[in-house]
Length: 242
Image 1 (cartoon, rainbow, N blue to C red):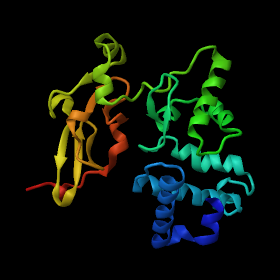
Image 2 (image 1 turned 90 degrees about the vertical axis):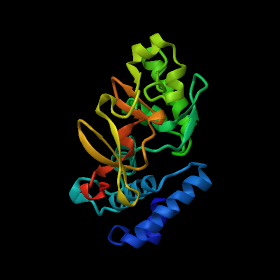
Image 3 (image 1 turned 90 degrees about the horizontal axis):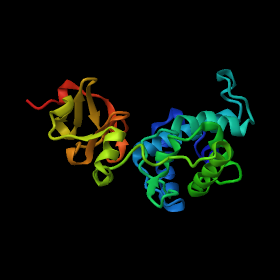
Image 4 (image 1 turned 180 degrees about the vertical axis):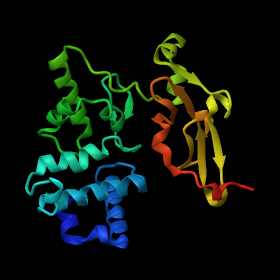
């Protein structure tokens, strides 16, 4: 992708049209080559990260501390590190317990040093191979298997847990929108949002309380992800219905 961007788009960050075209290409690669479902917001983040990576490897970001030709370091600092907690709902793997989970769920809990070692010898798209290599490295270091899949459950998975297990994990369910100070905002022109003690925010979709629960560790969890993954930015009072 680095060379494709460099050859076809050059000054992409200075051209909105070109950036959007890169994003479309990223989505085609994700959905066609890697069989990954990729949201538009995710494609933009990926495209911009790889553009920065391409510029760094060519020496255009040395003033910012990124040296030309340092492929691995630039890739980690400009692509992996910024994107490791991206709210992506794509790229599924089979966990050691046999559950199909988003790779990002496991990645967010991995030790960075062991993760980089696990990536050695694997294509970036070989998420299953990277996951399995990480688990092996973790066992070599600690003597135990890593628990990389249970931080973010869906409501259905949380409901299926033993009540004592739910209590141990600090999971509770919302009875209605007002409980816990969280409520859904419905604005003008298709804007949706949520409001809690931290303020009012626009969300990528209308929050369905049937797919939401509360975690003592993560706060509100929606569709198996922290609700922050669905926040777009501050709520604009102009969107309020009159």
